[in-house]
Length: 111
Image 1: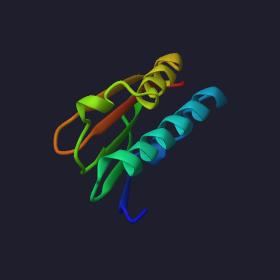
Image 2 (image 1 turned 120 degrees about the vertical axis):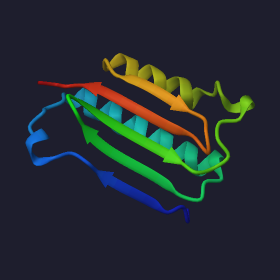
Image 3 (image 1 turned 180 degrees about the vertical axis):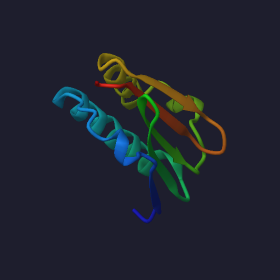
Protein backbone atom coordinates (compact mmCIF):
# COMPACT_ATOMS: atom_id res chain seq x y z
CA UNK A 1 0.00 0.00 0.00
CA UNK A 2 3.02 2.24 -0.20
CA UNK A 3 3.27 2.98 3.53
CA UNK A 4 6.78 2.30 4.86
CA UNK A 5 6.86 0.03 7.93
CA UNK A 6 9.71 0.05 10.42
CA UNK A 7 9.87 -2.92 12.78
CA UNK A 8 11.90 -2.60 15.98
CA UNK A 9 12.53 -5.68 18.08
CA UNK A 10 13.80 -4.64 21.50
CA UNK A 11 13.36 -8.12 22.97
CA UNK A 12 16.63 -9.59 24.24
CA UNK A 13 17.66 -13.25 23.98
CA UNK A 14 17.18 -13.60 27.76
CA UNK A 15 13.51 -12.62 27.31
CA UNK A 16 12.82 -15.63 25.08
CA UNK A 17 11.03 -18.65 26.44
CA UNK A 18 7.92 -16.89 27.65
CA UNK A 19 5.28 -19.14 26.18
CA UNK A 20 1.92 -17.61 25.45
CA UNK A 21 -1.02 -19.89 24.70
CA UNK A 22 -2.33 -20.40 21.20
CA UNK A 23 -5.39 -18.33 22.08
CA UNK A 24 -3.24 -15.39 23.20
CA UNK A 25 -1.00 -15.59 20.13
CA UNK A 26 -4.02 -15.81 17.80
CA UNK A 27 -5.74 -12.81 19.38
CA UNK A 28 -2.55 -10.72 19.28
CA UNK A 29 -2.11 -11.57 15.59
CA UNK A 30 -5.71 -10.60 14.81
CA UNK A 31 -5.41 -7.35 16.77
CA UNK A 32 -2.17 -6.33 15.05
CA UNK A 33 -3.71 -7.24 11.68
CA UNK A 34 -6.82 -5.12 12.41
CA UNK A 35 -4.73 -2.14 13.55
CA UNK A 36 -2.59 -2.30 10.39
CA UNK A 37 -5.75 -2.64 8.28
CA UNK A 38 -7.20 0.47 9.95
CA UNK A 39 -3.98 2.37 9.29
CA UNK A 40 -4.09 1.52 5.59
CA UNK A 41 -7.81 2.29 5.32
CA UNK A 42 -8.16 5.43 7.44
CA UNK A 43 -4.93 7.06 8.60
CA UNK A 44 -3.38 8.68 5.51
CA UNK A 45 -0.13 7.71 7.22
CA UNK A 46 3.31 8.56 5.86
CA UNK A 47 4.92 5.64 7.75
CA UNK A 48 4.28 3.14 10.53
CA UNK A 49 6.47 2.07 13.46
CA UNK A 50 5.94 -1.38 15.03
CA UNK A 51 7.94 -2.08 18.20
CA UNK A 52 8.16 -5.23 20.33
CA UNK A 53 9.65 -4.97 23.82
CA UNK A 54 9.71 -7.04 26.99
CA UNK A 55 10.21 -5.78 30.53
CA UNK A 56 8.27 -8.22 32.68
CA UNK A 57 5.41 -8.00 30.21
CA UNK A 58 5.22 -8.08 26.44
CA UNK A 59 4.57 -4.68 24.93
CA UNK A 60 3.66 -4.07 21.30
CA UNK A 61 3.51 -0.47 20.13
CA UNK A 62 2.11 0.49 16.74
CA UNK A 63 2.33 4.14 15.69
CA UNK A 64 1.13 5.66 12.46
CA UNK A 65 2.07 9.14 11.40
CA UNK A 66 -1.23 10.09 9.86
CA UNK A 67 -4.32 12.14 10.64
CA UNK A 68 -5.09 10.44 13.95
CA UNK A 69 -8.42 9.12 15.15
CA UNK A 70 -11.28 11.26 13.92
CA UNK A 71 -14.39 11.69 16.08
CA UNK A 72 -16.66 9.98 13.58
CA UNK A 73 -14.47 6.83 13.60
CA UNK A 74 -13.89 6.44 17.34
CA UNK A 75 -16.52 3.77 17.92
CA UNK A 76 -16.32 1.58 14.83
CA UNK A 77 -16.59 -2.20 15.03
CA UNK A 78 -12.86 -2.63 14.45
CA UNK A 79 -11.86 -0.59 17.49
CA UNK A 80 -14.34 -2.27 19.81
CA UNK A 81 -13.23 -5.69 18.53
CA UNK A 82 -9.59 -4.80 19.22
CA UNK A 83 -10.38 -3.69 22.78
CA UNK A 84 -12.50 -6.78 23.46
CA UNK A 85 -9.85 -9.21 22.19
CA UNK A 86 -7.08 -7.68 24.30
CA UNK A 87 -9.25 -7.59 27.42
CA UNK A 88 -10.28 -11.24 26.92
CA UNK A 89 -6.65 -12.40 26.99
CA UNK A 90 -5.79 -10.40 30.12
CA UNK A 91 -3.99 -7.58 28.37
CA UNK A 92 -4.41 -3.83 28.27
CA UNK A 93 -4.73 -1.45 25.35
CA UNK A 94 -3.91 2.23 25.40
CA UNK A 95 -4.45 4.67 22.54
CA UNK A 96 -2.77 8.03 22.14
CA UNK A 97 -4.11 10.36 19.46
CA UNK A 98 -1.21 12.80 19.01
CA UNK A 99 0.63 13.27 15.69
CA UNK A 100 -1.17 10.23 14.36
CA UNK A 101 -2.44 7.32 16.40
CA UNK A 102 -0.40 5.10 18.71
CA UNK A 103 -1.64 1.80 20.11
CA UNK A 104 0.17 0.25 23.08
CA UNK A 105 -0.72 -3.38 23.80
CA UNK A 106 0.59 -4.87 27.04
CA UNK A 107 0.35 -8.56 27.92
CA UNK A 108 1.34 -9.94 31.31
CA UNK A 109 4.20 -12.45 31.40
CA UNK A 110 2.98 -15.92 30.47
CA UNK A 111 5.57 -17.47 32.84
